[in-house]
Length: 232
Ligand SMILES: [Zn+2]
Image (cartoon, rainbow, N blue to C red; front, side, top):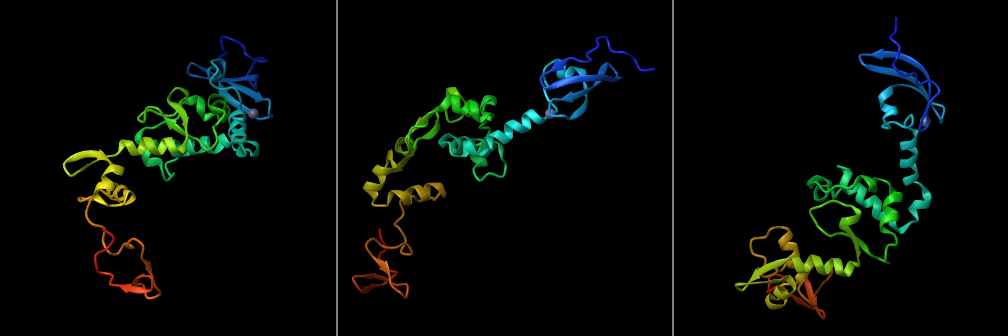
């Protein structure tokens, strides 16, 4: 004979769930047949809904996820920002996962809901990007602010310091002094080149020259030997 539960929950409502009947007892867990507002019936352990962990058959969560992916949001300038954050922090297949989710950068629980993110961060100033105040901490209201892309660039650049001619300086300064283009210096730093300030090799297009049909460097119609000099 099936043991009866201590408390009869039949007819009671918990979120979207209404308890239909007692099913059985497994150890100390009473199981109940519940019917969700959406029409789905399920058997659940009483504690899961009496303690508020479960409030529907799963349709509430599904609806919320769907809503986030729905059309009205897609036109929202905040939506693309939000989706980008979620993807790079939670999707292992995302191209930028390694710099975000992969190194422990998380999204706070509240922001998994686009509506909450929107409430916290709207409006997005025209063209602004989201910036984490502390770069080692995840995305949350207290750690995020909007910055214009110019500010973002400047922050990033002033952070990069290089050693040149026995002195520590910004990349821009080093580029001016060494004559190596700033972008080339960034590229070499990113590739961990041993000599960031080595002369630019001639396979790169020398300044003011263009390639002719035969692939030679030309200047005003005069052919310049490809091995000669280079841009540096
Ligand atoms: Zn349901």
